[in-house]
Length: 75
Picture 1: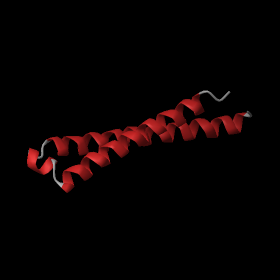
Picture 2 (picture 1 turned 45 degrees about the vertical axis):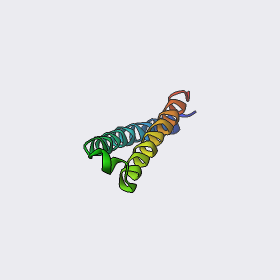
Picture 3 (picture 1 turned 60 degrees about the vertical axis):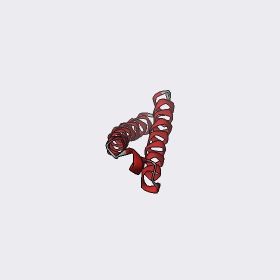
Picture 4 (picture 1 turned 120 degrees about the vertical axis):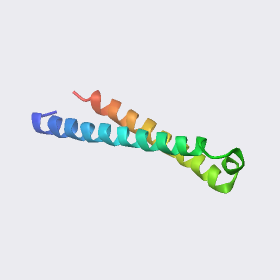
């Protein structure tokens, strides 16, 4: 890979790392909001949606980690 494409790849990797950190923060906030709900509300439709949101955000973080790892392995 030439120098220009390598730099572009590194720049994208840095952006993805920033996005991953932000998604982790949002997931943690949503998880805390869910945890602070009374148990009766946690079992409601809204509570289930919040749990689903946390799961989706965590999945996105894991997927980004895989992409970042792939970009790290580029020579």
